[in-house]
Length: 452
Image (cartoon, rainbow, N blue to C red; front, side):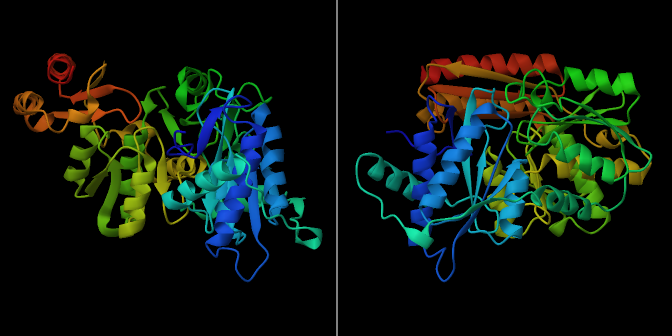
C-alpha cells in the first residue's frame, strides 16, 4: 500500500478513495496513537472537528466524530469554518487534536482529512506514519480496545467558534479598513460567512461573490484558482482591491483596482515591508520556496530584507520559520504564514493584513505591489525520463551551467523532479520572455537527451 498521508493530510475522491470507513478508522487510529504517545495523559481527551461545505463533508464529518467518540475522545463540532480556524481553535481551546475535512482548492468530488496536533500545529511525520500503520493493522482484522459506559466520548456543537475566530482575526490587525471597498471571492467555500464578517467588522465596504455554497459548487469557476470573475467584479464595483480564497481559505490571491493579479510573492513583499515598518519582521527575514519569482528575491535584496528559501511546499516554509523564529513566510500560490497569529496559512488573515496596509499607507495596492517586478517565468514538464538522475547527470549539469551563464544575474534555472511521476519540471526566469522560452526549450531537450 502506498502512503495514505500526503503533504496535506489524506485526500481522494470522496466515497471512492476516501470512504466513511476510512475516515472513521483513521480517526480511531489517531486517537490510539496520540494516547500511546502520552498526549491524553492525566485528562479526558478533546478534539475540534470542522469542515468545508462539500456535500461529502457531511458524512465524512459524521464518520470522524463517531470514530473519535468511540475511542473515548470528547468532540467539539465547529461546523463549516476555514482550515486555519480549526487550527486556531484547536490551540485556543486547549484541544488535544484537531481534524479538518477539506480538499482545499480541489474540485468538489474530492475531500480530505487533515489532523492537527495540540496547539494547532501539523502532526509530525512520524505520528502520521504511526497512525497509518495502526489504521492498516486494524483495518485487516485486529480488534480495537474500546471504552464503554462513561468512557465513551461526548459530542457537542461549538457554535462560539465562529465569533472567537473572527475576534482573533480582528485582534491581529494593526489598523482598521474604513474607506476601503473590497471584493471578496469566497470560492463557495469554508470562508463564505466568516471572511465577509471579518472584513465588515474591520470597517471595509464589502462586496462578495462566490459566497453561496450549496455543497456542490465549491471552487467551481471561482476563487483563487479562477480569477476572471473577481477581476471583473473589482472593476465593475470600483473597488480598491479584491481578495480571492480557495475552498478551505488557507490561502489568498489578490487583485488591484485595475483588475491586475497580485500573486503570493507580491503579497509577501508588501507584507514584509509593512511588518518591518512596525518592527514585526523578526530578524528582517522572510521565508519562501525556491519557486518564488526571481523578481521577489531581487526586490528583497534591494530593500535590505534577507530571503531564506526552502524546498517547494508550505510545510517546509513553516518548518524553517518555527526552527529559527521567523515571522513571515509563504508561497507564490498565496499560502502565506504569519506565525505570530497563525500556525498555518490563513487566507482571511492575509487578505485583512494586505487591505490594512493599503488603508494605512494611503497608496493603491498596485503601487505597493510594484515594489517587485515579476520576471517572465517559463515552466516545461518533461515526461517519461529518469527523474532520479537530475542531480547526477554530467550532461545535464553542463547544460544548466551554460544556461546560467547566458542568463546572468537577471535570470534563473531550476530543475525539479516530480515527487509522484516520471517527469522533470524545467523552470526558467529571465528579464525577457523570449529568452526564457528559448533557454527553457533547450534545457527541456537536454533533459530528454540526458535522462530519457
